[in-house]
Image (cartoon, rainbow, N blue to C red):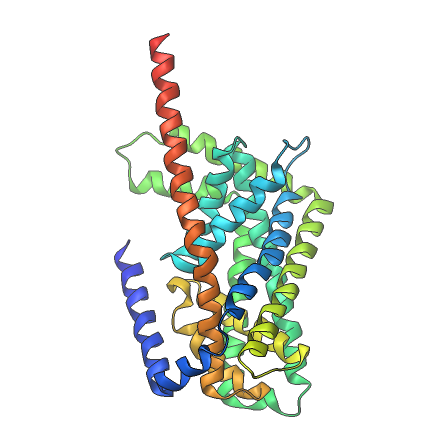
Length: 336
């Protein structure tokens, strides 16, 4: 873990504790216990948006697609989402590990990296559209967005998310991986970068070819948007279990804007503390008390743990199995 990641994790943890303590831990946890086994049911429901997100990756695979490609996409998405939610630097490391997982399952690295890069880009574009829909619903309520306390975080979060993904899109169309490799080569000149540079150029070429398949890219965007919308059901169900039911439009406002705030805090591991602060701001706008809004955030984190911990274990065991198999193959080759 880098020093920056440690500082960000520490800051997030302090913010997380501070937000909970400021609202009263007993009240928050008393509300959270109302959900009970409902959190498990929501965890099972999350398999639906996870499958939709995997399909958004799967449509970007080049034809002919190997048998079991959907299974590979689901496993990669599960592993990447687990890392995104629970590991330091997950929002950056998750896509890298998804590409590696696909490569370990037999897909060429260039194609795996291209599919994950493009799908991640358009998933974020879909998230921006989803957030705009939530902001439109919120703005339809008289004067809500004119309140300074909520307008500023929403504008900052939306702006950061839009600038980041737009910049990422433009850079990848101009040779993202080649540029990163050349920069690394200038900084660390003692090692030979020729092989990595060749691989980076192959990935950039695969990314460009994927972007040119406009039908597949459009399908990936639509599926990603559908995944965000279906994810709204989780908030709707959790609040039912927390005995604070809201309308579908209120659930959409909470999910879309809550995810936008979390996405803008991608540098903070798990958006720790930021997510809680976001729900604390958004909750009163749909009639939630502070303890219910924080209980909702904790329930979502419990769901992430429920699926995320097995996902990280799968990733670790898969990497270990792959490395062992590679050593055995190398040994067999040397014996010949």
